Length: 154
Image (cartoon, rainbow, N blue to C red; front, side):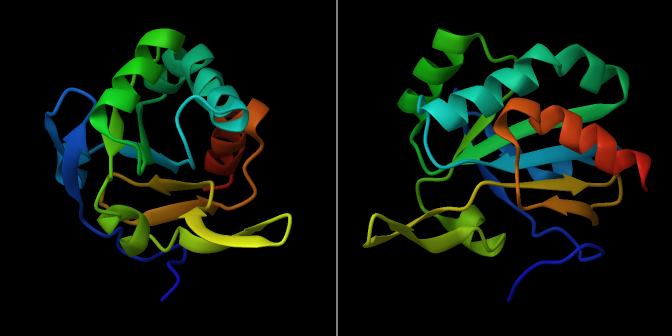
């Protein structure tokens, strides 16, 4: 079942890069940018994460929280955060539970080779836990701008 705007966001609880539990309920009363990306420290994912980093203060000023999710483990996330000075948490979804619940664990095709992976997708979840916007065609270099633009229409 594919999630759509207006759906209740699936609850999640997992560990971040420091082994601390993080859950959707931690963000009640806030708008959450929950972005899913394929892999730490790869060109597109780094560009996207750094775009959120570079615009993080303006996102916070608008009352937004940012959390990234990939199937990489905590150690990989720690290195990624340290290398690029990322100021927001990254969830280590090593069991694939969150990516599956959000419908972003999909079959991909790279030069004829099929494999399962994470579809780069951003969910904007409002203060009531409802998905207000889904961005499926993420512009890595302007990911935060896409979020801000989509919020203007809400």
